[in-house]
Length: 138
Image 1 (cartoon, one colour):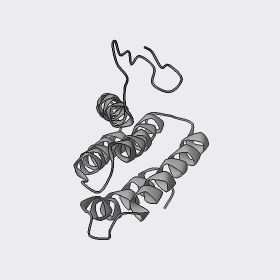
Image 2 (cartoon, rainbow, N blue to C red):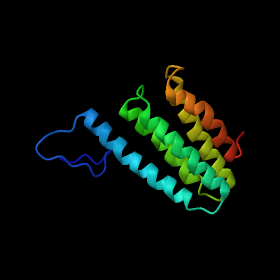
Image 3 (cartoon, rainbow, N blue to C red):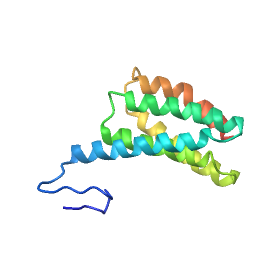
C-alpha cells in the first residue's frame, strides 16, 4: 500500500501505517534533511552563514530534545529550521528576509503553546533573536 499524497516514498506491505508511525517516519526524514541542509550552509565562506549554521544546529538539537512536543510538532518545527538554512544560502535579500520572517513566526507559534519552563522555550528565547539579527530583521 502506498500513500503518496503527503508521505512520498513510504510503502507498507501487509498492513497499514498508523498516524504515530507516520509521524515518526516524517520526523526522521526531516531531521536528516535539516542536518544535510545545515551542512551545506556550513560549507559557505561567509562568516554570517557559518554563524547561522551554528545557531540552527543548536535550534535543531533543542527541538529534537523537547519532550513537550509530539513527533509531528517536532517535524513541523524542523521544517522551519530547514527553511532558514535554505534561505541562509540565498543571495536575494528581500526574498530571503520575507521567507525567514515567516519561518521564525512559525517557530514562535510552536513554542507559544509550550510551558515557559520547557527547554525549547529557553533555547528559542536565546537563539531566535540572534537568527533574526543575522537575517537583518531585528
